[in-house]
Image 1 (cartoon, rainbow, N blue to C red):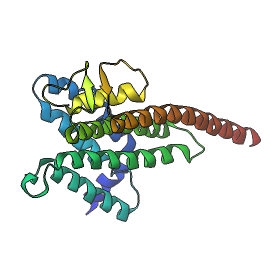
Image 2 (tube, one colour; image 1 turned 135 degrees about the horizontal axis):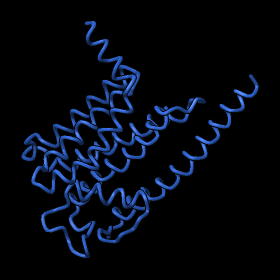
Image 3 (tube, rainbow, N blue to C red; image 1 turned 180 degrees about the vertical axis):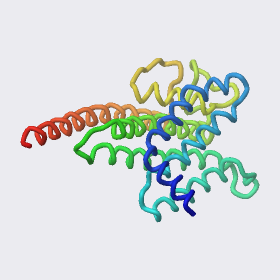
Image 4 (cartoon, rainbow, N blue to C red; image 1 turned 90 degrees about the vertical axis):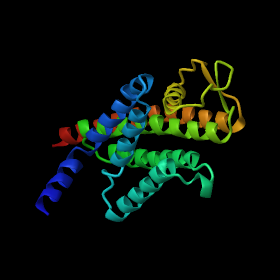
Amino acid sequence: MPWRASVRAWLLRRRYALLFGLLLATIAIGPIAAEFGFGRGLEVLLGLSLLATAVPVQAAGQRRVLLAIIVLAVVLRYAPLRSVLGDTQALSFVLWGAIALYAAYQALRYALTSVPVDGDHLIAALSAYLLVGVFWGAVYVAVEERMPGSLLAAGARFPQGMTLSDGIYFSFVTLATLGYGDITPVTPIARGLAVFEAIAGQFYLAVLVARLVSLRAASEASDDTR
């Protein structure tokens, strides 16, 4: 249908701007909504961000597979499957993190494989960074759910369990290597994840800046030869 083609074309043109806006809303609005008793608001924003990760995928087959994994992650998160499969929410969070890493790879690849560096490429690169921070937080929540006491808040266990808001906060503190120390990983798995994220965050910024500078220089050199 013509309207579907129009919607698809509009989404493709603004795919990374849409993803970037949803991720910013998740970071800025989600914790506030959770603080005022709208905990589902954060999960809704996360779910929309998760769906938005499939929009930039150009290959139809890959996009269908990604959407199927997203549906599976949502079902594992909300469907009453505990009596059959045990606690599936932790597995759902792990799937969310895996999807986000794949989407971050696609965004970074798009940002760094074109010589002209425009606003869309910069937004794609920033989206990749935010994707890792937002959804890696879900992985921390999964670890804490499966192995309580893996992460401590002010030296003690979380009174009512680690929330998504807590996980996202700790993820960005780790990704940016701020190291406030109010939430600390204490088990080998949690510490390994934190170290991996901190190193990845620093490598990402270093590689991103170097690559964008080289692309910009290549573009200016091309213009001079003309």
